[in-house]
Every structure is written in structure tokens, then in C-alpha cells.
Amino acid sequence: MAPEKEEEEIMRVKITGKCRVKPNKKLGRRECQLVTFDLPYIAFQYNQKLMVYKGDEYEDRVGKLKDGLGVVLEDFYQLAGKLAKDEDWVFRVEYDDDMEGVEVLEAKAEWIGVEDLTVEEGTSTLKELIPSNGILNSEGHHRPLLSVQLTKLKDGLAMGLAFNHAIIDGTSTWHFMSSWAQICSGLPSISLLPFLDRTKVRNTKVKFQLSPPDQNGSSTDDAKPVYQPLRERVFKFSESGIDKIKSEINSNIPSGGSKPFSTFQSLAVHIWRHVTQARQLKPEDYTVFTFFADCRKRVDPPMPESYFGNLIQAIFTVTAAGLLSMNPPEFGASMIQKAIETHDAKAIEERNKQFESAPKVYQFKDAGVNCVAVGSSPRFPVYEVDFGWGKPETVRSGINNKFDGMVYLYPGKSGGRSIDVEISLEAGAMERLEKDKEFVLEVN
Image 1 (cartoon, rainbow, N blue to C red):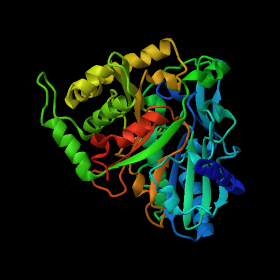
Image 2 (cartoon, rainbow, N blue to C red):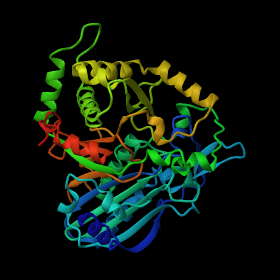
Image 3 (cartoon, rainbow, N blue to C red):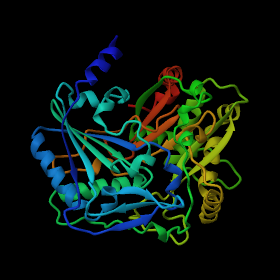
Image 4 (spheres, helix red, strand yellow):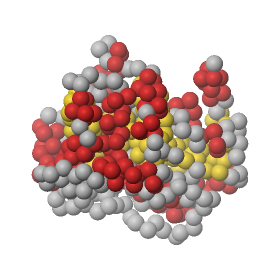
């Protein structure tokens, strides 16, 4: 009966105010073409984050956040704009002074405490703390490209954010958040200006025509049986746990050119193998590992870290479940390492040309069969986003873009090399994963 009670309580999150925030200065008309790196995410949903802060003074904090947002949007004005396309279906992001800007919602849920939102179970029952649930990025021509919901809690503030993923990736998201926090903390200007001309990395005009069936993978009868009830959970890997996983896998580096395995490669294969076991796949069943690589330093010429937009590509590797499970971890880690190292400027160029010759609307099912797909990065400075009242108590993903096998990695709040692993799985597989002592052994 507990889940039903939670669903009843969630409806008590009350929106108390709405407004729009625009850049403080007049900027005139600005526009920038979306490029090949942006377009694969048009039919994905808005990218959602939830950040939770302790303390009262809700009204003062809301005022400071709005004031700081108006300042930081002078540099990140694309977030205050909208999507548009020309007669040839070439997409762009555009801004003009008469546009409405970023949506800011104020809400109350004073029956929720900060501690309630730091539990390991998923935030799906608290989805009303984050705006734009189920909204597709393609709707950005008539919806705000950024929506912010500021919810007053019993003892804190929940900041729900929804970014249009067709215009920015994770690196750009946290660049913006860090810059916004700098302004709110009293700095006169941000420390790193965004690099806004995305055509410097790719200037091919891609005719990308969307059709209604392509925008919603769940609209077809064939897709419906695929969906199973999902559970979400955060597994907190301590610094010592991460070090143990990495040390053990590097104690048996295979011959044949493998280098020492990185922290990401070590943790990635740990997750892939144990999720595969929890799914109880047949030995001959294929399983795919997918992750999104930051291409800023991989493209030729390299782009600056401040490049504002999507500059990521999905990388895939696949094997049989039996091979992954029966071989030692370094087998799968070598596959992941090879996929990373071979995704160089040439591979990126080939992927772009392939997409440009036959543009495709990507859906969740394209991630691969029996997939483990990793988004976000433990390198993102999520716990450094301090608006002047301390670091967040927790940072989580919303319900958008979740499917069986989706994984988000965040740095652990305790710092150091600790990592939080947020996983969405079919309920039965999640229950088995939680009982897998070899998986949770390293988890505090």
C-alpha cells in the first residue's frame, strides 16, 4: 500500500507561481544552426536533473536565483530562445529580445523533507518536483528550452531542471549551472564564457524531417510489449570500493596491447557484468554496452571545453552474455577500452557522414538489445554548484529518458573517488542485483 500512498501525496505538490526570466540586457536577434552532433537527440525527452539544498529562507533564495539567472543568460542566451527550422527542415536555435525566456515555476511541498529525497530508491514517485515530464526535445519550438522548478520543502529547497537535450549535452549543462552559481555567489562575471558557434565543429546543413510516429516510440503496437515496470536505485560506491574494483581488474591485464584500465572502464564492466547476470540472460543472448563519449578533444581540430552544445557520440560494444559472464572482468573491460580508443577523429567523421547521408530519428530501443547505457559522468562538478547557501545534499536524474538498463554516473557526495551509480532496471532484475553480494560488496 505504500506506493499508493506516495502517489496520493505527490499530488500535493502545489505550483504557486510562474514567470519567465530573460537576459537582463538587450541582445537583439541571434541564431545558430543545430549541427550533426545535436540532431540525434531531437526525439529524446528533455534532460532532467534534481538538486536538493538544505535551509530555509525560500523567498530570498528564489529572488537570488531569478536575479542571477537574468545575468547569466546574457552569456547563455540560447537557453532563453527556442528551436526553429527553415523550409528545408534545417534546425536552428534562435533568440530575440521579444521571446519569453526561461520558465521558472515556484512550488510548495512542505510535507517533504530533504532527507526524504536522499534515499537510495528512485525519484519516480516525486516526479512533480521536476518540470517537463515526458516532453520531447522536438517540442522546443513552442516550449521553453529550459524550465526550472523551485519547490519549498519542509527544511530546504528542491531545484528541478529540464534542459532541451537537442541544444546541450552534460558538459554544457554543468558549465551553465556552475556559471549561474558563480553569479549568485557574488562574482561580477562568470569565469569561463561559453563557446557558442557550434558550426565551427560542423557546418553541414542537414535536412532533418520529423514525422509524428518517429517522435514517440511508444505509439506503435509493436513497442508496447517491450516496456516493463522499472525500479530505480542509487548504489553508492565508496572511494575504497572504487579502488578495489580498479585494482583487482588491473591485476590481470590481458596481453595483446591492453593498457591499464581506467576508473570508468573498471566500474563500467563491473556494472555491465552484474546487470547481465541479474537479467538471467541465456549464454547465447547478446548484450550491448553503450556510453556517450565527449568528443571535444577527439575532433580535429579540437574544440574548447567551453563549447556550448552537444559534442558527444554514442559508442557501442557487444558480446554474448555467456562470454561476458564466464570470462574474467578484463575481457569486457578490454572491449570497452578498445571502443573508447578507436573512437578517434576519423571514426567521428565517418559517423557524422553516415548520419548526414541518411538522417535517423533515434529512440531508446536503438541503444541495443539487453543494453546497459551510461550517461552523465562522475567528472561533472555537480556537488560544486553552490549558489551561496552550501552544496547540494543530493543530485539525481528525473524520469525522462529512462529505460531498462539506463545508468547515470555522478560523483559521490563524500568526494574523492567515490561514485554514485543510478540504475533503472526491470523490477525482478533489480531485486536480484540488490542481493548480489559481489556487486554490492563494494558499496557503502
